[in-house]
Image (cartoon, rainbow, N blue to C red; front, side, top):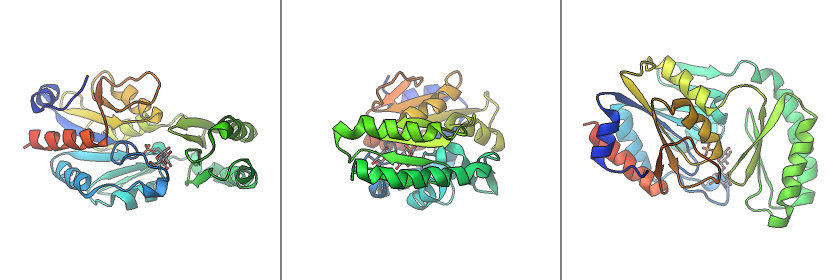
Length: 259
Ligand SMILES: O=P(O)(O)OC[C@H]1O[C@H](O[C@H]2O[C@H](CO)[C@@H](O)[C@H](O)[C@H]2O)[C@H](O)[C@@H](O)[C@@H]1O
């Protein structure tokens, strides 16, 4: 169901205060060919600033937290990078998943192996090393090479039992095989903000990709999950927005609703 009208939003919120969770790529910025070119617009920043004056706003992304922070560059927000493995926000809010830093040397080995094999498979592959994950982007690789790229990533990762793979939009990621994801990060943030009382607070989660399903799933019984566009798999989100421009429109209406 599309969600854009002020009266629909007011009805869903009731007397509760929203806590807003936003994915970055495909939600706050359109998907582009190269990750470094995904720049948030000034208009989107303005509306985020407006929202953050009225209620808590978190950006929850597969990107590394430092990359995410420097791209959004707004002081009053909570940032959860690497799918929530590292979180920071105002008033000393901070969390780094405890088990993951121990296994980083293994991730360095995986990265090295990838650097050795992937250039020969396709020159369009981009290896995106983050602190807790490695993204292998194949958006600019030849279509015929994609199965081989995915197969090779899986073959490498099988040798490292402490890691697993996950898929997103034209990306296969290597991440620690621990029970932690965007949905768990959301629940952690709600707790730390003192916003766990479901009678007083309502989480809104907006995302476009498969990894956002963990966020939708985490709040499906008491929050508002909004899928942006399509990711080709079933969704736990009840609501829909067409694209980034509708996300901006929704956020403008939400900010106005909270006057
Ligand atoms: O959780 P997100 O904020 O959506 O991050 C997921 C991944 O987003 C980025 O990759 C995606 O966007 C790129 C720029 O539009 C695009 O070129 C790529 O094909 C997409 O997969 C980011 O580079 C990754 O690190 C994130 O994991």
